[in-house]
Length: 415
Image (cartoon, rainbow, N blue to C red):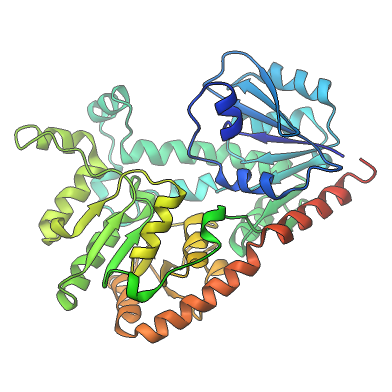
């Protein structure tokens, strides 16, 4: 059975073979690849990348890798003609090449695998921020673009534009692979003729052994796994931190990623004006008196993430929208108590019996959810144990790989 994966990133093994630095994205696909048996499956990983100027081919551990320059539709058409796969699994829906696949290949033989949903992410990009962030600022937009950044409005508009492409792709799809009740409902509204298939993701291996223990964690330590874009809700976590600190004076917030830029007091206003969301986070923390309680870890690899889970008393997912956040699945596997925004597909991953859920838009609800876990450690540990048991079952690599192979055989009989 010959199956081609179409990806929007270079897998790490392929990057290294090409002498390029591996990208941080795509762990879900890499974990799935590792779990799939290679016997009886002729797998081709076709990756579009702006790092390439010409097609590149490599064979690594029995898997064929094909790299194509970003935006090169003719290269895709040639690859499909040469490889003649029996089935394509398309990872992601918002890129131009996603539409090309469904135009160049039989849609009945394309399995569209949802990663995130760009349109809804764009709609929620600025949730919880002052209205000024959605006003047009031509000078700032031009300067931010020249320095490699984007204003909040530009981030919102970029995702909304991708969302339009995404809706067109889903409308053409005949088979959709998703993970949550939310993405299923979204796809049913856009692509009523498509058949929806459920498949959980496989997490990175380092999280499966678990290991979280209260005695090894730092009391009243929160961990947020991403805060560089407003969609992830770090501004709301800072507001919750200020409320929590009134009851727990030792409350601390650790954030994966880099702190807001600071070039000293003279340039600080200009830098924070240009880097508007990080600048807002810094000014918000100062205004609420919690700047000394916020700690940025830098970019974390899988082991670094695991260590942050182990040190935290609570993992906090504060996003305005998510489909199936891997960070939540990894936190559940590790065994750390979780408080999560009940948005998008999150309630499909975590129930009230397994963690604390809250409405991120409701004032005080985020702090209330964390406070419930901190005020009753025994209850928090009971919920965390239930969450870990569920995550081990849902994200079981062998079960996920077997389910995908069964689906391949059904869509490509005799392939």
